[in-house]
Image (tube, rainbow, N blue to C red; front, side):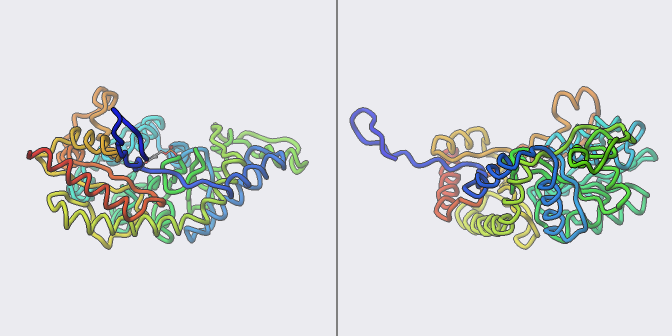
Length: 388
Ligand SMILES: *Cc1c(COP(=O)(O)O)cnc(C)c1O
């Protein structure tokens, strides 16, 4: 882009976005079809989206809802997690991981991460926080990096606990997510690996619990509006105190298009992540990239750890001035005002260290290799200015 300032041309580089959904003609056509058909809310497209989602993850069936937050809430309710129960979960997550536990009437118990270069909830620290009131464990696949599910299942079984997955970052880890837990929740929010603008999905392998989740998402009613509209059901009963967490046909129509392209996008994200890894280690060796290169992932985000001495806010400001967006994933949940006021105090040293040094670089399927080079150069320059 060329612009003029004070008579002399100033070249301003194009903005490199942190993330960006891939949407196009296929999504527009899918939306137009729904409008032409005229049935707007939960119906046959939602069902097709559920089946496509289940097939992608090599499981029998799935339940669509209108967000991952709703998915988590329904999962906890389907297993009667409630007052008096403690749920172990990571503080290094998005706040919804904890707020759903509070909404269930249960108590969140924050667990530290393994180490700053492995920001997964620690099995050892979780074990140390188990009490007679512990009812469930909620793991979160940070950045889409697969948790060690066999180890978590073993810990849950040893103490007779339920195991839930916040798999908001982990859509598409076929055969791995949703297979060893009691329930897994996925997100289709705009910044996730595939999107329906807002939306979520639940995998529950137990058929009876899955049927319960279906009831809970729609007022606990025994017949859907579609079934009644099509004359397949006359009346209905209410057998649970449910919610309106339904997905609509417009979102499902977008989801059906997006899910077909997801494997290619996830591959592209992984390739870009490898390029980042190689460039960061050769040009900015004092910056750490968490997790091993071979760790299975959806590459949802590109986290790095800045050197202890770096001023992160200044680095982010310099990168922004060079037209590169960055972010932080995450401010630890236990440090938010609400959680400080209502729980704790908590000792989570690795979480706090990681959170102070963490920086998220741009990553999305439309990023190019030269974008990655520009991001890493910008990062190197932003860090170098600190010493100057
Ligand atoms: C995005 C996200 C959620 C919430 O997803 P919504 O679909 O927006 O409700 C929950 N947990 C994690 C880890 C997330 O990243």
